[in-house]
Structures are given as structure tokens and as C-alpha cells.
Length: 139
Image (cartoon, rainbow, N blue to C red; front, side, top):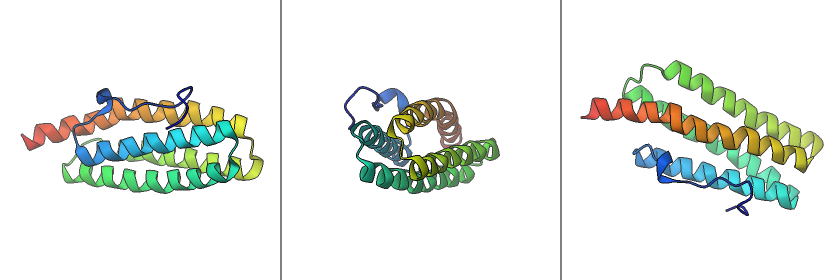
């Protein structure tokens, strides 16, 4: 789970209350921690595999989240999807950067700045909005 220096820790404050989504978010945090750890130890095979898995998992998670938002007629779904698309593109760009340069120090910096900050902010703001919308409708 990372060495604690730049890793991200899951906390109850990040729970949306939607079990499947929270479980996927926890997995995204674990993947991100694995990636930052690989970057720090310069385990190049690990970095490539983790990036690939992160891209695939992110796409799968976003599809699940969007399906749920659509099911509950979340009004800002189009905007939310655009955020997901931008993030996915950023992770794909990181993968290209790694494949081309293999510069783990720069990659590590990009991962911690982009992925870590984005995940936390996105969950706390945008995903919470979906969860609140679902709670309103479900009750």
C-alpha cells in the first residue's frame, strides 16, 4: 500500500454510501499507491503493468458509476462523463509518457499531482453529488 510518503489513504470521509462505488474507489486508491510505490522503487515492469491495469479499471469504474447515475436520472451526467473522459485521457497520456521515456521521477511527480489530487477532489465533490441525488430519489 505504498510507503506512506506520497500514497493516498482511504478514509470514511470519502465514502459515498454506495457500497459498490466505494469499493471501486478503494481499489483505485490501492492501484494508485501501487503505482507510486513502483515509481519510487523504479520497478519498471510493475509501473507498466499497474498503469495498464489502472486505465482498464478506471474505464470500468467510470462505466459503472455512469450507469448508476443514468439509472437515477442524475441531471449533471454529461458534465460528469466529460470529467471521466478527461481523467481517462490523462492516465492514457501517463502510459504513453512511461512507454516513451520511462522517466520514473517525472512519472512519479505526474502520478502524485494528477491522479492523487484528481481522485480525492472528484470523489469529494462530484461523486458525492451523485450519491446525494440517489439518496433523495431513493427515500
